[in-house]
Length: 419
Image (cartoon, rainbow, N blue to C red; front, side):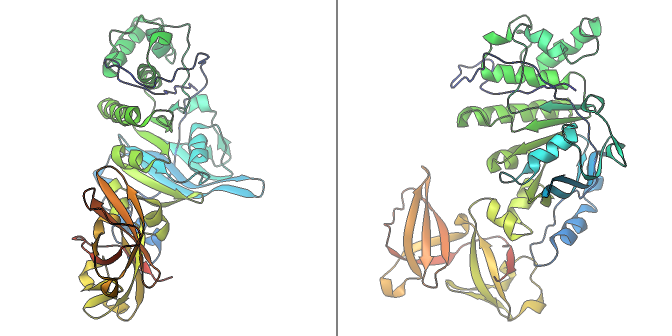
């Protein structure tokens, strides 16, 4: 198994900032192959009920628009003594797509990646790559026999080798004419076609990341695994490099699985996002689908700045402490919920605060966050509910100022049974 782990920094042909170079870079293993079965897309509805059932319902009709399954995880469990790190993981990754495992620290996403790579052995369940089971049914293939490329957080390049020699390292016959052709092809793909004879110690961090990515792609793995490859970059470099890596993966037609806890990263570059919670997939789907139609409170709370507005469902309206609104505003709300109490998911751009006399106020501003282009005001309503309201940076309210709050969303909102 080959370890092809890019770290980061900057574009090859631009002045660089914040170059993070380790002088003792060394190569480690990083290739692997995986298999699994699971759902293909998250549910499009946000009404109460079984998240698993809704996710399964959404798979049909979506998966057939993607390529063939390349990686399948079916009921994968990983225990360490009495502790369960991964619990019944179900996931299918299709040819040519980038799926990101997104979740908080300790949720099991990195353990899942390591099991796919062959660095950890599942306690139960199966992993398959290209239809071949590589873990499960009493057999486990070693990492070097899995045809999976692995890019770790701390990538490893050989400092005594040139750029071209580092890229060729993962090939069976690195000194052959075929290898030279493959290296030239990859260096052109990553924008380093004039850098083949250079030492990797002379490169910027971003250039070294591209070299490591090219090395991982050289043997044409079935699946490329990326373990938070941008986490060591400053913000501006991180944005540039993740867009560049996405371009490279798309042009190469590579099937990839990435792990991150950075929501912006996952939503901006992924074909699908799998939100991991407590060792299992809570929801998987297109970035916009997962963000706009979260099928559980956990997903809703984890993605973006979420607030929950209590509401009572009427025959035509929903009644809240900030006014009554058409019940059609709630996504997938059936007639059977008349008289029920629900919590409506609202994000800062769904709400607007207006300064009013104290006697007319729904609540008061208890905090304000300045983000540059905007303010996010935290408003505590008279009933104790706290909401966040997004405003242009020119609209300044004082902490303690009484305000009325209006729901201004022009799209369907997710909702959950009242807690």
